[in-house]
Image (cartoon, rainbow, N blue to C red):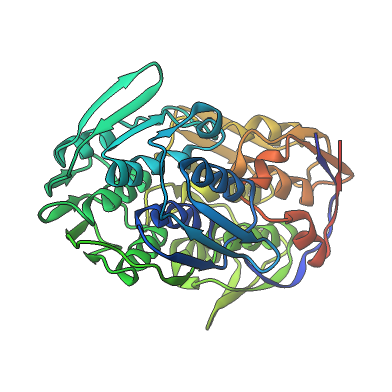
Length: 420
């Protein structure tokens, strides 16, 4: 398996443009299954492992897909969907694959979808998604690891989520656009990626109002049309490089995304002593030689994103004083702390809170990535550590970051991919 070798203590400086958002591209790709005629073109689609897995799922179902990974352009023709089953061998590769449930159910009247895989981040109940489709009139059962949903025609209804759900909100959007009657989603996820999915569907002819707020209303339409659409920039990738600059005392200029989507991240990094300037299509960040301690709690958007928790923790390992990071979104998202300790970090875990005492220096060691975002945080820690750091299992990182080592090299990092 491939690994990264990092020679740390390099100050990162320079400019980067981030690619399209994985968390927006994937649900938009699956949404193309709702378009019964014509060829849909998607631009700014990042060439990541999860994207290629999504292509395999669509092709298995009968869609015709072409993808230019150099130009980041994808075309999808879902006119001839003939499968109603999404098998385990494809679904196990990523949790986002559960997004096929709604489109298959709408197109085929029955969907058999294996329970999803992907990163291991604690329990990921799909009960709220199943309950949502039941509210829309579907009969849903579970058998041998598969969710089986049946409905000749979904009907509108009121959907209440106990807590905001990215995948749940998107799946209900899929089911509601052609349902019979109005659908309302309460306590919907408010993420910018949800807004991107809704804007794609609206451009295709859907009638969705309230995306980006906890209350979404969907008026049904007869059909959607093929369109061309550009995926928004990846705020999480941008946030990662901001923190790479922060932990190394550097300065970066990042473009290709909406900087307002990182409002709370900008606020927290400013509290830590970074200077941030908002630009038209991005931002610039200048970090102090040593950042200040911080208190942070992850929370669904517009709260601090759980997907950047590991990266912020990396920064706090070298901050002055004691930082407190509380994780409220996933119940098992501190797997990176043990690896950071191997590099010399002083981190203690108490229930859902990490207590980080900033140290003066870190030392390189052999570590491994346990999921996409943990891997990113560990890489950042290695960038600031003295000596050499070896990061293993980087296939996790490749699922969410396109050639991260090349981007870091462009900023002055000494990082190499060793193929194995």
